[in-house]
Length: 95
Image (tube, rainbow, N blue to C red; front, side):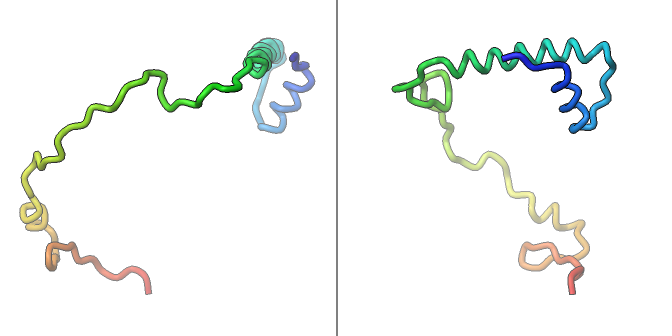
């Protein structure tokens, strides 16, 4: 599927893209190549092909769900202006 230079100029205008006359020909050629590739991919028969999330058929390695860091809440809240029951107190900003 080919796209014309007039169509490229129209799309560039609608997208508010500044294009020089020299670049219009290059963009026309590149966009036509992209549209040809899309048309080629649409022609492939995909009936019976199961969609996949990943090209490799493998399971994800999982790690043990264990705590690896110590609790630093008291140290972090020691420098806070106000805390209560482990929560930061902040001024009300919405009436």
